[in-house]
Length: 122
Image (cartoon, rainbow, N blue to C red; front, side, top):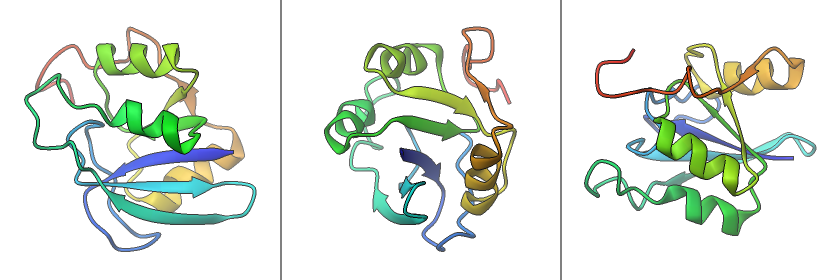
């Protein structure tokens, strides 16, 4: 399974998770079956709020799931419509923790109630 995780930095498995999906400077693209990952830059992070389009890029990569600490309702809905499952990472501090929680099956899928409804939601 291919999983994407928004990150604040490029520090390998210890990279801090970003609190927001679309404005994260980096994303980790992890293959959970192969236990590998690569960190790529978010090339759409400087767009206006609500205009980030990383979801379109994720579909091209064959991503199956997103692990995040925060995501807007519109972005979560778009990902769901594209067949990409969205999971809350339970405020995981870093990539390693988020992937571990996902592999253990302890993360909950995002519902409309869990998605951010505006700035300052967490």
